[in-house]
Image (cartoon, rainbow, N blue to C red):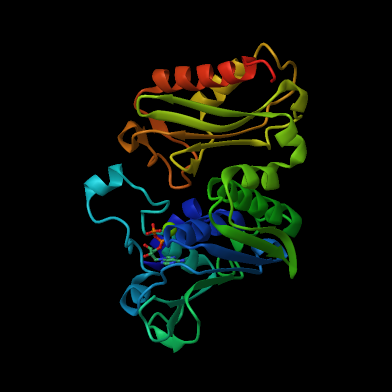
Length: 319
Ligand code: ADP
Ligand code: MG
């Protein structure tokens, strides 16, 4: 069982940033309004995330570190219509198999909190006002071969920062904070999409971006696309979401590239923050556990829709 979890962990837990992604998604799924992330040494030494979500009751907590313990899905039909970010019930088990892991949580109606760890899976009474605190320490302490693949603290922190930004952009209604080695690097108050986009991409982007909104049947695309003047030398400022989930998808990237083909040349890349929403039955998000790839049922139609929406927005004369 430990071995199976460690093998699964290889897919789910590549580096501190993948742990952070899973934990942030769990906090979001729990309905949190405020989430705080504290990292030490790139997240390798410690990754601590505390939220004010619904918490986990004692019985669930006893299972939370076991494989396939999910509270989010109870049938195969659910798998088609997943509204929550996580649904496989393997992230915490995988993390606990490769790092010292401790969860302290207090469900809304509980008189006090409970705690479990990778070593002590029987819940013990603990103190916490509400929500959940997950602490993950010494990533890969028991699998040195994997630990060798981790990069410098700075690089690992950079990946964590990417994950944090991706999630922060998609959840403007959630207050978020991230600190590294005791220093607060970003503090984002709950707000609307425009404010959050400005906080993450900056004033320069906003000054050179067009708001976009397109709807067609059950398809909806919204967000911001940069004008050619704001071209970048890399693709770091490209954020595309499908039903709230960050994706890097070939079909989508192609549609964007085509839309910019006549106005951006050479090795210049556009910046954008785009949210595509569609009927969950029209997209398979289950392609890979790391989940940045998706498969569309109507790929051609999606491509056309995105291409036209972006082209039209960029072609509209400045007011
Ligand atoms: P999944 O998210 O796929 O269900 P996880 O292993 O990530 O699986 O989490 C297992 C379960 O633990 C979740 O289904 C949820 O019930 C509970 N859980 C984990 N993190 C939190 C949290 N921050 N707040 C409330 N419940 C949580
Ligand atoms: Mg999860």
